[in-house]
Length: 525
Image 1 (spheres, helix red, strand yellow):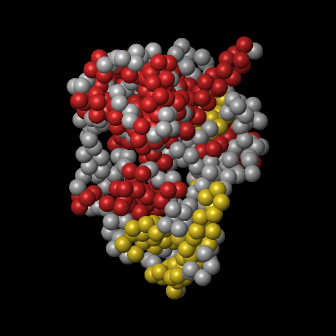
Image 2 (spheres, helix red, strand yellow):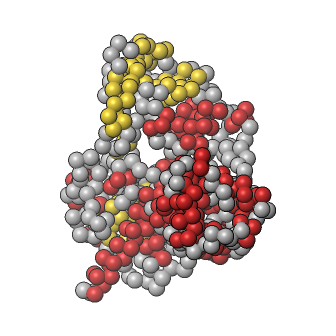
Image 3 (cartoon, one colour):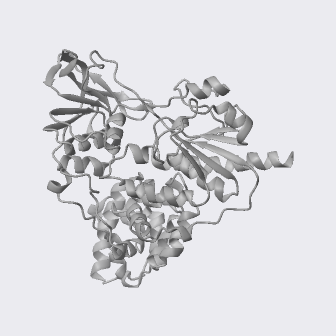
């Protein structure tokens, strides 16, 4: 392989050293290079080359592998091509935007996995999902085995294949080299949509005689309930809403996560023998203290972030100003079918983008996102932002509302100020600073605030003296235990507003810790 001097000083020598350290002979012809050697080489390259050097190596290697007609050249090309609804259809309905993923392309995509010695994908995943083993089974068309492997860990694979932040892909060794990681999330979706079935579920363990109450049925609650049941415990899930699934079912629009997908996976989970008490709000309909004292041996609190954080600006109480989660919930429950006029959505996360795209589908004449930082700092998924822009939603970056004005109690106008980015703050993002004299007014019929959420936990604090942090989240130790014996917590009630993957990981860990706690208790019986 020829790395020229103009590719960078010393790069050829650097790569030659890496070849030697990888055990690959310097005189090996690229036409003879095999996947095992290539995998070891790429692992070393990602460790020891800078990003620009990796890019150069990839360009040269890719061209030469093609010239030598080595099948490995195919590994650099993505095999899954997403099919999306045409834009004119998208904005008139809530049909899922990304259409069914072809199983054959998923098999080809899974075959791109290098089976790295250092599985960065597994390390990066909050669940430590066994990505290489799963992809290996898929690449061999052993779909049922792949599904059984997945269900040992994750009961919501179809959901994962749609909304996971895909930390595994960001860490993928092949992606670090080529910029085209294995599309792990899409492979999961393609296989799970067709092969996740009740018969693939693990069997519950031998009955332990212990009962656990899980409060909340979002990702953390559902996952904890699933694993506790597999461990042999009796489990009851309490959910304040009529539908099970938490924000998965009440807040994420169908164009991103169809309700039928959540309902199918909830049905599979409950088939293990998990009891459900929906429409029951703990703290009001039943008391937390009574559950712990009279009915259950342990409790897991996973009620998420229910309360919106709204901007503290004049006019926030005007009619026409709404919280994004409440707005999305009304739409999901078919309580709202129209929204007309000029709509502004304040925020830059997935909830903000979901609210903006939902408003457009309800008939808004114009929809604009208002975000106080630049696009680079936007926490929303890149693909979601791209789809929103395709659909005609505008974004005003470096802009912040500072006042809302109305007539007869109804919103009419919004005052904004332009921002500039200052120093890096505690969260790793640059702090937005108002630019003096840059204020301006816009006409507005609706302002939807998607500026964060926080837990509602007064009931837990008052009833059992569950300790809260300064942020209003539940304080837990490394075992996810509160200071109240037998009470555990996880997901957003501990982390603050987080995401699906971390909430799910908390559910798995909580189940293990509760099982250990109950095991110790059984010794004292």
